[in-house]
Image (cartoon, rainbow over all chains, first blue to last red; front, side):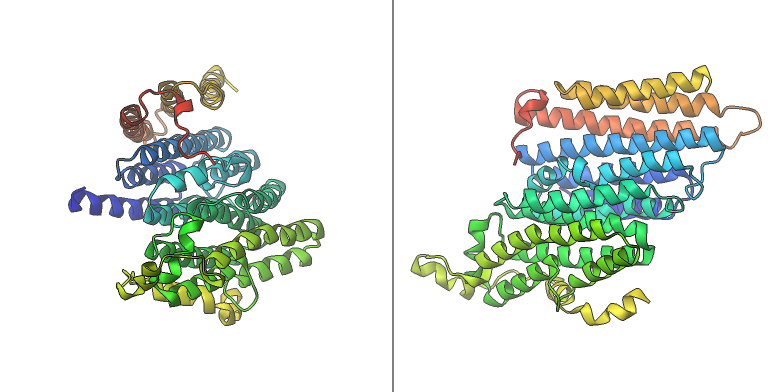
Length: 343
Length: 98
């Protein structure tokens, strides 16, 4: 693909998210979402592989239908109330739009497309889909938050955290595991919309940091399946140690960054006396933690039998990406900054 | 709810039901999405074209332009997936199943 077209696509990808973020009119928000879909499609389909084509087709169908549903709900809202502002949507409209946005985000009952799209795209594109593409729908969820459909958000968040952990146990391919980890994290994230928006921002930022660190590590070691992870230590032993720490951070173990959102969310839920969802959420993080630990086990804690010459792959210089070091450090060490994040 | 509102909302609902339930061909899925877009276009075009609100008359055009872009992307995806998967049946898109 020519560099001019590529830079145009990346610029359009960035701009469309910013259009959606800065819009007050529903039509402009829809334009941003549609441009977002249209500009990620060539990025997905760039490697002309059947899997890439299939992933792009599925992504297009889901996103176009969800965006059309958002525009329908806002048109209904304009019929009822007479104005198109995002801030003033009625309760019914908010419910429909929330469901459409949850479809766009890949929350659990509507999550079927998400692991397949991630599996069909390259590692960098999967990184973009699971981080940057979440921002525009989440901003809309922020903006319609004056009367949120509390029960739907809570129910779908709990279902998503449960389903992401349970289905992810069964996977052996790293991109699908990351997809289910992302589904589980999105479940935690939309529960925070009921609690406070600052908490949502914190959770989203930490989710993006840890996911970016993990995808960058997987991209550096070119790890596609779990059996590839056994070979990762021969390329760069320090990187595999950092991968293990990043995985623990994704799972939310205490001295690491990923513990921050889990701590704050469970604390807030207890303060709101929602004990049953709290218990289910805390339990639902255990299957996720199990498959993270399984990945870490294959990465660092064991050395599978290899032939002799594969042990010396570290002599070749691994292609280290520039952002890898800051991303892994942030994914490991941000927990002491928590008082600054929540105040 | 007037006849216009009922017709456009009903068209949209029929189209999205078709998209969700009738999963045989990719062409029919794309046609259902186009049906949704046309329903939205007529909803925007019919219900706001009063002489008082002249500033909303640009909305259906903007919406139709982007819907046409989406239709173009959908058709190019149809061509691409037909070339790689040998037909446009949706059950052929099963390379990435869990």
